[in-house]
Length: 545
Image (cartoon, rainbow, N blue to C red; front, side, top):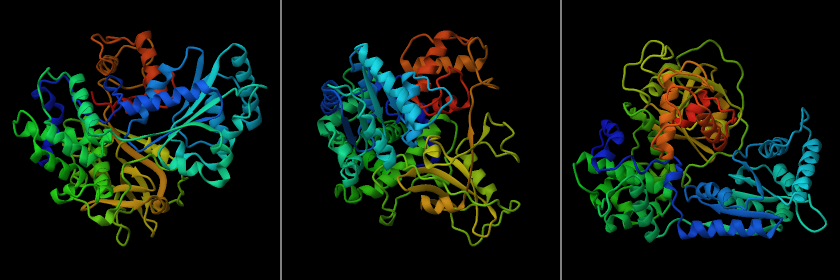
């Protein structure tokens, strides 16, 4: 299997070599690839039972990448028609913000007031009216392990909204296994005692892993009877990934890329071993020892995932040296998989002096601004970087933003150039590749380094920059009635995403396209205004189809 950076250029073409219609192992959530294993169906059944039981809390936990998002996508469609559901995807909220978000989701008008009492009263009135009409109300909170204690307490108080006979609101908490540990704390015992249904979603077993791989290949158009992954190889995939679907996708993608590079008709054990080394940073000896080095391998996998997401949208790009995953030493010891960070407020540094390229004496991840930008540029294109990379050349544009929490950065889901200062107060740049729990993965001169978020917060000034590739002709937000080549590109992208033969629009922004855009925005935590702006395009750019 080729390890040359140019191998990444093949990713947009290899599926054609195998007679597929599209790349089958994208890490982006695509409803057409929905795979419901027996344990996924069991988890869904527990949630539906909890909703039907009425009142209290329902808890679903599972490791990152096990398919909790799959359950989230299925649940609203399975609920009775008389059920209204509010879905909170971003838990980095205060108690007031969470109540306001719930009211927004349910269409509750609370005017200009944002007090806790007003929001609670308006929600209570809505719940009583809904109950009087024979309707049930459900509040679903994803990534609930990141909720602050005071927010959890406010959520518990919401279950006090009741009639003489039953609760008015049912609450579903979905999160990683540590959520159950958090709820087991003595100070949260009242909430924990109100949980009426619990389910922990386990990874796929070997047989389910085989079915999962086959399912994705068939959806991508694999011809009946053709075998790309022999069972002996599938067993090795399961051993290395422990049956976590997201990890299976990354490993299988790299293996098909390797088979394509060798003009092979299917993958083999040698390609598996090579892919595991390249993607997960493991050696053959480590692979045979099971999960002994799993935390180390997953750290490398996180970085590979970041790169794949970026390069998939930019197929002509060549990854920089800093983004090539090398074997990781045991000292790295990262958590198993990338997770959204805890909502920690970023420390804002004092105003820095005039930019100064000298970062001598600073941490290795504090790069000269020009060097950090050059690396960011190389992640986007193999064209030479101009004097001003924000001149809108090579089809790339500069974007800027400010953030107050790590979650805000995490939602960008792409390499970011953080504006930072050295301990000597000189300007510097930090090339952020990913966030993993309480740590960040950043580029350094000779590779990649893991940095505690607490250390990063001491240097980061709160601003960030990124490069992105807009559709052809995109020069302003697109709304109903607008005509532009960008409309054509976006409509075609949605058609491929949904598996529809005809796009919802040609070159004119139609009402049907606006409805689809609103649905996409709502499911991705964006303002569902039906307008195609930069944020919507950035989310779309992360979907590889």
